[in-house]
Length: 391
Image: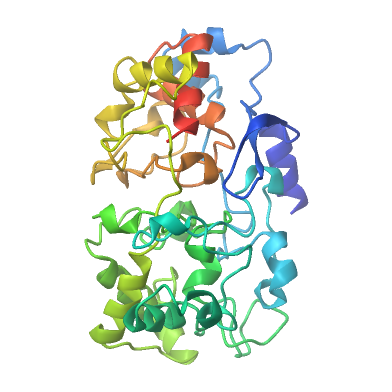
C-alpha cells in the first residue's frame, strides 16, 4: 500500500478543490481537476502539440493505466467508508487506494424508473437484507421485491467466505450483488477484469453503476454479454469476476434457475438515472434553463469534441465497444475494445474510465483531448465540463 500511495502521489494532486455549487444528489460536492501531474518542463499546451510517438517515447502520457494495488492477487476491494458500515468486507491483505473525495457519495441516492415522481427513495440508508422490505414494500411489485432480496443475499466469493482460504479476517457468508453495486450505484469498488490472461495483463476494473441499466445492451466491459439475465447468471457461475468455477464450487456453488435470475434482472432494470432538469425529453439542453457555458459545452460535445459519436442521446451511449488504441501513448499494451459507458448522471460516478485513472471530469476531458487530438482550448474544456455536469 505504501508503494501504491507513492504511485498515486507521483501521478496526481490528491488534494483538489471542491466545487462550491455542483453537488451530487445527496449533497456531496464534486472534486474539481485536473489532478494529473505533468512531467518536468511540460505543460498541457506543449503536450497537445506533441505526436503520440513523442509522448510515448518521453513517457509523458499523464493518464497511463492504473494498477490494482495488489495486481498479482487481485480481488474486490471496498472503500473504507463502506467497510466502516460492513466490517465483513475488510481484507487483511490490501486496502482501498483512492481518497474518498474522488468517490461517489455514500450512501448513493436511489431513483426508480417506475416511480420517477418519488425522487430519491433511499431515505439516506444503505439498502440491505435487513431493511429492503421496509423501504420498498409499497413501491415495488412482489417479483421485483424477490429480485431485490436475492441481490441483497450474500453468496460465497473468493475473498469473502466462510472457508479457510478467504482474504477477510472475518468468516462470512460472502458478498452480495448490491455490496458492489451499492444502492444500485457504486462507491468506486474495484477488481480485475475477468476476461484477460495471463494475470499481469488483467486490468483494473471499477464497479459501474446500475442506473439506467434498462437502456443498456452490452453488459461487462469486454465480454459483450447481451442481456442482464445472462450477466447475472454468468457472474454467479464464474465466481464473481475470478472466472474460476472450480474455486466457486469449493465455497458453495450458487445455481439459480432462470426464473429467479429474471427476477433479479427485473429489479436491476428498475434503477434509474438521477434527474437532469436542464435536459428536454430528447436529451438536448433546454436553453432557457442553461447557462452560456453549458450551451457552449453542448456545441463542443456534438461537434469539435466528437463526444456524441460514441455517447448518443438520450442515454448518452451507443451500445458499441471501442478501442482507443492507447498503446500509441504508453509503452504498455493497450486494453483493446471496451464498452462505451453512459454519461447520464456522470458527475455522480467518479473516478472515470474503466480503471478510474481519471479522477475528475476535467481529467477525463484532458484525456480525450489528447487521445482524440481535439486541440480544445482551456475555455472549450471548461464549457464541455459544464455540460457534462448537467447530464
